[in-house]
Length: 115
Image 1 (cartoon, rainbow, N blue to C red):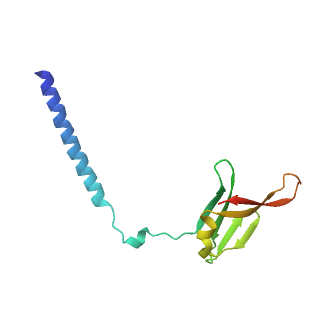
Image 2: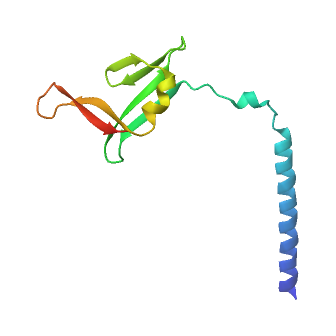
Image 3: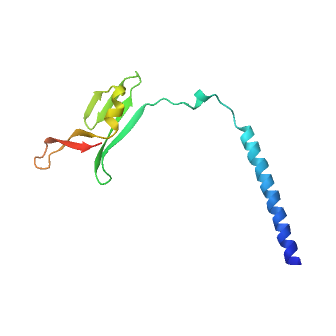
């Protein structure tokens, strides 16, 4: 009989703990500040792009300067960039990059990569 009473006591304690945890979580949620939806919006200022596969590839990026202009940073090439072209620049397909020529030190060759 002692074993049954102990199990019942444990169940009662578990229920009390769950009720207390629920009260605490309800209190925590009630104390969180409420903000309008625009508070949760963000302003995009940069994008990192990877081309190639998991075994090899190339990274480059787009970033917005403090004057609001967008730039492409691709190794030593830095050029103005039109953000209206972001989807075609970053979603699939092929693109060309300049890479070191493995046969001529100091030279570059153009290579087509998957986006």
